[in-house]
Image (cartoon, rainbow over all chains, first blue to last red; front, side, top):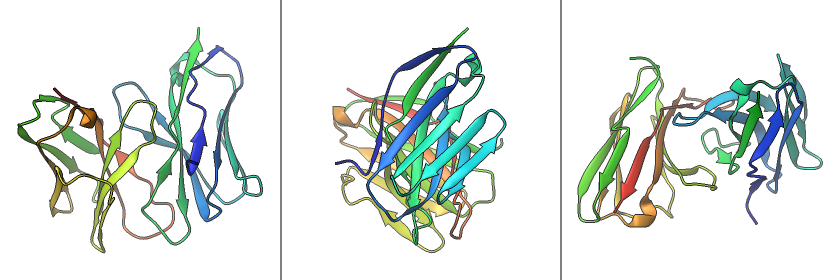
Length: 112
Length: 114
């Protein structure tokens, strides 16, 4: 079993739709949770960062962590064609500042 | 130049060649990383260099050899690679210390091994 599971998609939605991206994980030591966005031919860039359980909102993006279920989500409201990218979840266990464990990424296309 | 830069952006090499990938960060960070990204697979951490430590993923074959001459530069030396080594190689950097550890990525080198 992979430490972090992420549905690879591809996922296509119409412009304006609400998008839900998810990851599940098996290691209960994970404490820091991140979402990266990767455009074609570019490196990943940090989009959202959360620590432990709860919600965090930044504009049209909301990151949600449920540690009891070992499940994290990223919601995108009013999706735009410019949101088309691959979204990667990543996690860090407590006590290890450098060892990010990534999901395999979900490819999202927002159709105009 | 700003951020994290990588050269070359594309590389095609035969299995008997020797080549090197270069990464440079202009962010004042003191930790640098090499990742391998293959299609439909998670990013795989290959090497970490920081003031405090060098970390290697033990599953990385010895045909990949990292070099970090200072905190701003990182190299990945390649020799006698295999076709399955074809992938996107990403460099990243971060500030030292614990906590958030936001890693800033370069655009990657697309490597094809014939």
